[in-house]
Image (cartoon, rainbow, N blue to C red; front, side, top):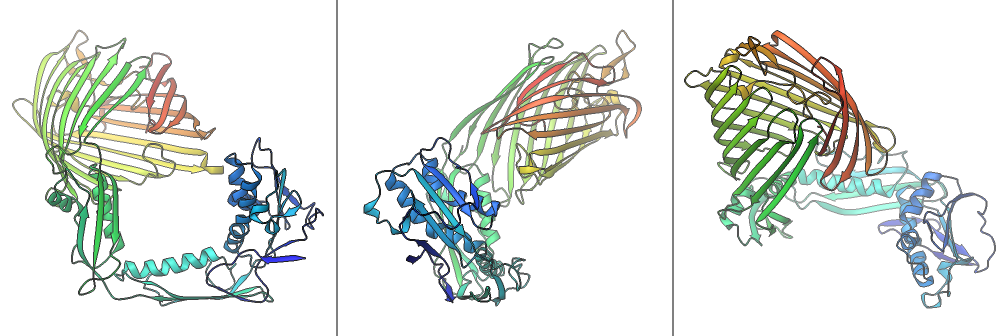
Length: 625
């Protein structure tokens, strides 16, 4: 009988028989495990019948082996020739054995037969003319457990894998993970050249036990040396170093290298960023880092759209220059045309230009200058607005953002009360904490934002404070997290001025795709300002609250359905007081995933309040929130 060692894992010392064998006589006799668990052919329309059989009936292990198999991969790619199948089969002995080691099986037997002939016994140049059936039979044996699981020395606060301890199943994956975490623990304490000094992993087959010992060498405490950058062509080297903010002279910390990478990436200048630690330490145990960058194309353009059956269509576009003056400055021009084909208002138009300069004052602060104009022609009012501002954006991490601006705003409003001019100086300040897993289609996490805007009125405009907070939460469950519960809440109020002294664009409305679907855009306001044929005119309120709930269900990999309900309330006075009214809407939607986010189609109708006008449709890109 032909017996051969199928594979071996580096670093494992064997005590007892070989860990795995391929067994076969070259005959077409039935496998000793025939009749036990058998998986179906995982490759549709393949001319080769591929079967996996696991002697202990473990369906999960069978699925892992099948998915890891090179034979499965070859057939899935349409490589059906006997030479391809034989090559994949011979490679599968070591591949499948490695997976079994990762699951703690060290005395497995793997049998791979091509039309009844053991693959290990077929020379590469003696491949048959054709292969019609492949049967992979695995006897995993018994799982081994740790008799010793030792790693030393370890840095303070190092978290080792929970399963790397005496009595647990001895998976090689846990051993590798323990070694990696041990090294990472020392690196996080400044020992950049920490490494595994030695490993001793002994398998006792008689007792089915593994003796695992891992020795680490921390190496010296290291400080950052110099950053050496290449690859930049249009961006000046001085500005490249300023944007990177490399912590020269500070104690080594791998997270600081990731911070440098994050700063370079968010600048938008580069398409590729590579940071490599020097192989050898410099004088005084300093570590240089080599940076290689590839710059993006200078210019980029994009567009978006949204359609509502009641409010018409909205189209937007932008043009951007990524390196305007050679220092990473980003120029962006935005335009938006709304209410195209609306039955209740004329077309609205917005346009703006903004320049951002990264690494102003320090590497995590971006300065901006912005000018924009808006022309709104709504059912209850006309608004012309101009804004000029200077701002600073603080980006300490990918999750936390702070922004403050100094703005000059001038607007003219025409409604049933006549024409009113507003002029203010404002200081809007926003803090955002984003813990979503995916920004465009979140399944887990939360998003919190708060904006406080103190403003000083000029001439007859009032002064005060506008505050808006919003929170969003996401939780998924079920198989493959196919069901997601999503919720949003938004509240806002204005303190200080009377409602008639408050800029109309600062007041709060409710209704439309961004607040309460099923209700027309800005359909809920208040009547608190004298004028017009009814004695008062309808405007936004001084306080608002909106809540939204969604149940998202992923039907197919790219297709999802959504059920949602929205509600909103507006108050005439500050602090949620005075005249008030509410409305609500609900509906169903469909989502189709695209590379830039889900395509959204919602159908909604009014379910509460008296502002509704029947069923409405919303079509856009991205989730509602």
